Image 1 (cartoon, one colour):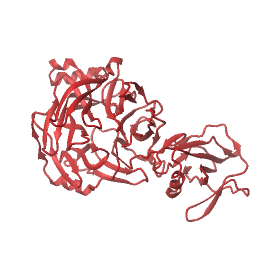
Image 2 (tube, helix red, strand yellow):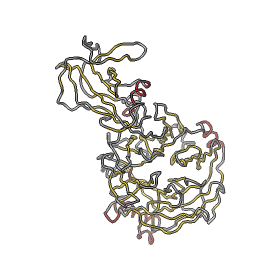
Image 3 (cartoon, one colour):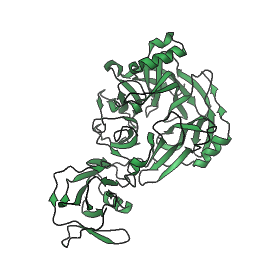
Image 4 (tube, one colour):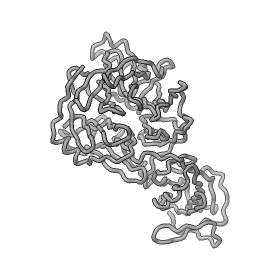
Length: 506
């Protein structure tokens, strides 16, 4: 607990914080500590956007008093830790610190009054990149053990501050008849003008938002394999690529991997929003296609596929038993198809990343906005890498065909589901690196040479919020603007309107 602050008569630095105008001073006499200083989240020696919210952190040491001296160019501020050892920046002070530091950095010095007296710990830096990150990130919050879905929701966070707003919540925890799952939100070109997500269960349908117009569609069709999932909005047309999946999940009893999600069957489908027409792109029993993704030009569709020839001779029950016993043998590669926008037709399948040749498996391809890089996750097997500890972020340079891991951003635990910023300089992804159980959002700088830098956790007003929230983040999507439709508008459509059927047109 902080009872008193040591005030030195000889001022090393001075800053006035808040309305109380109290002065905090760095002690003149101190010793340098050889001990490593742990802070949470780990914001040491990272690169951040110039429009990011304050990076508040907790200092993990036993001390009577803790002070942080923060130096940016010619400005120096001194911030005392609170009762929980947290260094919290005033939002205006933080913005003043970083506003002129584009391409430069901030230096932070931690002083702590311990039993040995005042100690100064090893300094660390927070560098500020010249490029901003898109202001908003959308995500789903869900309990990590989801045998049954209860309360969950889609949310939008303002990255320039700590404001989080619900896009849509299914919070009828005790109303099982009306309970439903929400998933697979997606936007067109980092804009909220066109947006969609799925509702599964009661009041189900695909929710499409165009500006402030919302409609609920029934994508089921006898000619389509199953539910349409994993959407990718065409960058120039009002159309969407989906995979149509018959998905099953099982839960390990004794294994580091807690959940296994497999596709018993999956195909690619194409949906024209204006015509409300859907058709198959690829429909095979032995090839499991999923995670479609357009390139920025809209003339190529990337996707993942696993070839399982054994499925050709198996019925549904036999297929289930096959996956149950051979799930670690299912390896996905990344393919692409050329797209003719005038004819709305696909052709020329090409192998892009051959992970199965090295005994690995690829998932979630995403093309950078400049079209130069293919970002994906690589794991030991399967495609639902959000529970695979072997999962890491990888990139293929589409200009010179080199493929490499984003080692500085990766961790020893799960690093998966990811997205690009609209300028291609930032990556947001989910990671279980903190405790192995909960996915939290991490942000990494991706420089002009194709190198990713050390990732940092999504900042919160209190660092404790990242621990106390017993939900997992998934499916981050960056947008330049805030969603125009509010939660009540979505509820009005979901609960009171029947889903409109779409037509199958081959």
